[in-house]
Image 1 (cartoon, rainbow over the protein chains, first blue to last red):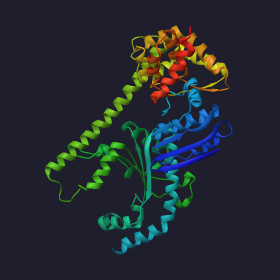
Image 2 (cartoon, rainbow over the protein chains, first blue to last red; image 1 turned 90 degrees about the vertical axis):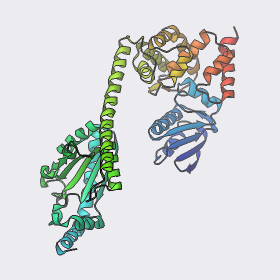
Image 3 (spheres, chains in turn red, brown; image 1 turned 60 degrees about the vertical axis):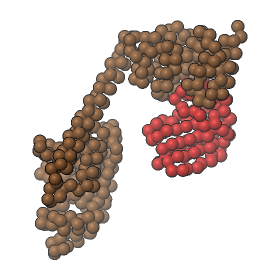
Image 4 (cartoon, rainbow over the protein chains, first blue to last red; image 1 turned 90 degrees about the horizontal axis):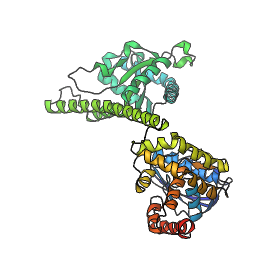
Length: 97
Length: 353
């Protein structure tokens, strides 16, 4: 999975691309493994067209880490991914923009 | 610098590597203590005194020290915790895990005279004896461990920064100002304990009342809604049934965002939420089955039950498309997207009879 990263001060922007599934979720998990100094994590979901349970678990893990350190925002969430967030009860504790 | 002080510096140079080794051991041990007690800390500071700092100390107070062993703060560590009673808990653990040199240790909090100013911490002078199992080179070397609250740390840092301990004393107005701040911080530390204990007691009480179905009059708030999701029998059953659709794991998350959503429905008390769960639980499950049954999703948040309950209520009460868009806007920040989803929801479940 291709994940673009950019860092500005305490803000980290991750832009993953493709499917966030069992195969690719560990790569995103790896990226959130070291969030030292990060106060705001933004995940740009524009190029994510599918999310599986493994992807949901990584998103939840990132949210829990960032609850301790600052905040996390998901932006450009497509309708199909949003629907998965909703039917699993994830949408109301994630900050989706 | 006199010959005696030069000799102390020389001994320091020879012993420095051992102190660095000791520093690592002490720090690891303190980290382990903090982890085992589960006490939240702001951090653990630790350092081996630099040669320049030691030289300065000898110049200032050289008469007090005849040899390197007389200096007990060549290595110093400091644990900064949140609550004053945790200072005592950590202190007891330090006494268990380190050999304490009682003669040189003090609870500086208790040493402050009633009419003095200052807000100090708990200080231990410790060492490892030769039976401790640590390398011989680190044994019998004294080091200091300080334990303090964040507010005690604030006091100490500002005291150090302003350096008010002038040999000439302070004008009365400044001395009085410091006393007032010290008193304020002491009261604040006590208040934080009172608030923490009060919140715990409130949460325990709400949990008990929800479990025993005696929470009808409790307001829906950040504590009660989370306890409802975790402990209410009907809500746990609903979440359990939804999870069973795909054999999903339920991840516990904060339900605080539902406070305003429930209020939108006019639900302000736990008893009203209980009634909603009784009234719409089955419809919520049917909705969940229809949404999740065709997927292989095996993870849900603990908010899933609430999510489906709210949708079941929208359908049963036949809310208008506009009202549904208003409700969806709680979780879909982009207004147009909320409208689109409301339209689709309305057409699917309500509009077409």
